[in-house]
Length: 281
Length: 217
Ligand code: FES
Ligand SMILES: [Fe+2]
Image (cartoon, rainbow over all chains, first blue to last red; front, side, top):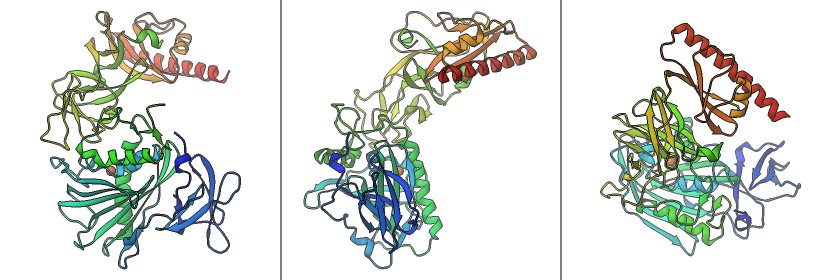
């Protein structure tokens, strides 16, 4: 579709820890951009014609906007809790719509088939009813009371458990997942998916985590998450059509897909259609 | 090419390249299909798009007599109807959930499929047997030019200077590619088979060179 409705949003364009004075060339919604660091240690992101883009630094990443954002980047209050380990997973390039990447992240029914013996396994395939809502005040999509049986839910989990999740979509190409935290039952682990839309059919996925896990080596945490995303990529690059269909009729949702249904509806309502396909096309 | 393949048989694979429980992508005219063989040995061609969330079914897996999608495991019968939605094990999927399937016929070691309703049986190989298949990076016209002879209406071509007993069965893959099934006399011995393979390899190189030149011109 087009980027009009999404131009004033924030998008991840790189890890702050990896900024380089020479800059790194990349793309944001079809526009070539350069992500660099200036003499004072601040990120400097320039657009195709050399204009300086709005930037901020949050959750380990540099965020930029092609337009004039009238709001701060969404909050993740848990990210500032002491004692969490912040994990910069890095980047995975996926030849798919940025919106399809987010939708896949919101989906649990694929765990037994795509993340076999890690996030799910047959015959534990049933998706119990859960709650989905669009929270009007925050203007976010939320799915709560999502439960799923997992053979190995996290690096810190040994053996199978029923894991509980909450999913949140605070921006069109970002999602935050809260997940049962085995070492601290009263807290949630935070796993995010920040998606940089390069084009309507290519994106860079920047996962990031804030976990209570003092034991697992950092490289194992990163490796675990990268394994998961590479498995997802094999799906995302083979969906037809490439763009996310926002109008009903082209695909068949069931009760397990209610988060996806709400996400699509919310995108359409806001005209967040970069990477989407509408019936009119 | 494509308009007259709608409704006619297309040689999509050699039987030996599709063992039981295998699934592979194949082309029928401009359509990509998931070609699969059930445990009991029946070959089926299903549309290569799962109606749930659009995943390619050619990435799926076969269990028993059904093809399952690799994304959420929805499974489909040979007739196309959805049999199972694993996220809702207690639910019988409504009749309306189905994938399109294509006519398939298998004879003389070749799997044929057709979009639409084909008139009659696929052509016989008449004393030939399949040797192997090769994908050539050249459209059929370049293969004909390289072979010095045209293909007949059923897709068969006997290269002018090839050893006798060699015949090619061509199938347009779109995007400048052709699937070539190499056929050889039923009772050809090992040396004839090696000679045939060499001849096809040389033909492939000539056709691909012509295609490159053609594209550059
Ligand atoms: S896309 Fe095929 S089962 Fe979901
Ligand atoms: Fe996944």
